[in-house]
Length: 322
Image (cartoon, one colour):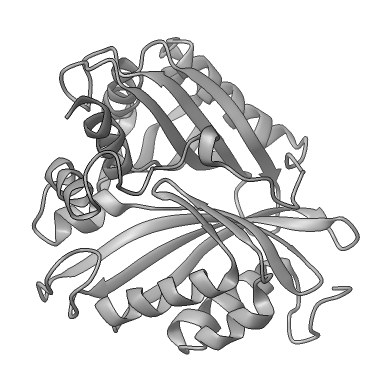
């Protein structure tokens, strides 16, 4: 690839290899090369600017989970050598809570969750990023509850007025990546499915999903077939029934030896004015950053992975409502 080291055979190979080099080979200092000095990184928890903050965060995570592994399940990508690439990288990540840190005193418990990172790269360097990890899944596997964990975060960060503000458009920053993905039919198909669900047309699940679908959702949730898929998506939508969906980025791909795939980054922004997975309606203004990956088969959407952050949603609700 033009502008990239010859040790990488293609863009997915680049993403998979540098992830392993940084995390599992403990090459934290390589971020000085692989990440732009002023890179913006957006998480449901907030925004981080610059590769030094990324390096410090990586170091803190490894101190808390010294055996941390990040195994790449898929890289769904778009772009080219001249304009730059965007990878939507889905990982299965695991580790043992052996050090004190963000998740509290060491518990000795092990977790296995998924994360998805959208990374823009050009000339051997990542210069823009969006990332979600299943924080609720970690919290639950370490023996805590996401709502209580969010409350404790607010308290230890100085209360509702002083705590770290979760990500929303008001705290977003402009980065160098201006793309919106590609126009492949599979990305468009997934965007259409999300749009129909957020328009409360949940018949789309039985119309577009394989009856034997397997889905992976936040809080380490695995479900199968139509009824549980409907329950999970309805639980989100019914919590924010009037919130506005925006498709931020969509990619579709057809690659040798792989099913047709899609990666969609989306947001849902509006009031917590309905009963659902976040309990009693509070009227709080909530911003949901979401990622969905999908694989399609001969009978429809056969595997779906969706991530959003329960902890950051609870944090937004409690910051406003007490």
